[in-house]
Length: 165
Image (cartoon, rainbow, N blue to C red; front, side, top):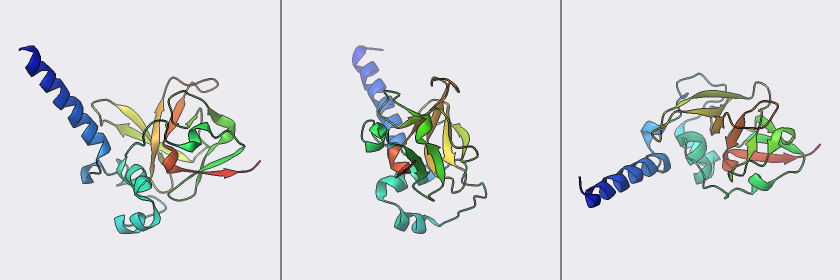
């Protein structure tokens, strides 16, 4: 295979993976969408409730651009709620600066989130979603700080910060 064909094929593969992850697609509906969540809404109802970016992330498993959320550098005391249903999902007490450009936590509030397997983007990751509405919040990785060793890497647009002690 000559160099030009190799570069074209590589570029096409990368572009396909990027498009799959960044364009809203029906087949990318939340993996847990068949689960019976406490809060159920039609696609139209979710679209009316959420901003376009929130809908893309929470309902279509999109990902916001790194360093685009003001919540990444938010370190005041408070609670981070699911932007879809207002369930408290993370506490500022577990937030840390992961250097990734996304709000990161070493643990969720007990019983607030669930996980599922995400095989998009040519990799297997652990997706984190709200246990009450099923909204996609982000992913969890095994490279976080003590005491859990976990890094819950969340989309800021999927969260709502409520200040307070």
